[in-house]
Length: 198
Image 1 (spheres, rainbow, N blue to C red):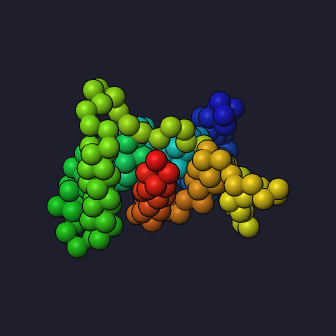
Image 2 (cartoon, rainbow, N blue to C red):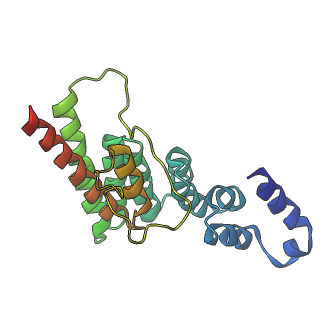
C-alpha cells in the first residue's frame, strides 16, 4: 500500500505527473479497486470521502464529506454515520441533506431507516452508558467473486453469522438505501427468530 502511495507521489514528478492530475491518478486507483490509495491521492474532499467509504473507513469518509457542505455530501455523511452505528447523528445529516434538496428521496428513505434503527436500539438496549453501538466486524472482500454464492456450505450446512455477514457485505450495492434496508431487515429477522426460540 505504501508503495502505491509512494508511486503516486513520484508520479506527480515524473512523466505520468505531466499528463495526469492527482484527481486523474486517484480515479485510476479507484477504478482498480485500490480505494485507500485513491483516497490518499485525491485532493477533492468529496472524492476522498467516496474512496474512504468504499475502503470501509467510515470515520475518515465522514470527515471528508464534512468538508464539502452539499446535499450529496450531507447524505453521504449520514450513510457513513449509519455504518458507524451513530444513528441519531445520521438522522441530523439526512435532515440537512433534505433541507438542501427537498425533492431528493434517498435521504428521506435513509433518514427513516436510521431513525427506526435508533428507536429499536433504544428499546432493546436501554441506557448503554457511553458505549457506541456499531458493527461487530466488517470484512471487505476485495475480489469480485460474489456470483453464484450460496448461504450454505458444500456439505449443506448453513453458514455462520459472520460468514453470512461477509457474503452480504460483498454483495453491497452502491446505493446505500438498498443496503441499509436489507441489513436492518436481516437484523430484525434474526431478532425475531431469537425471541421465538426463547
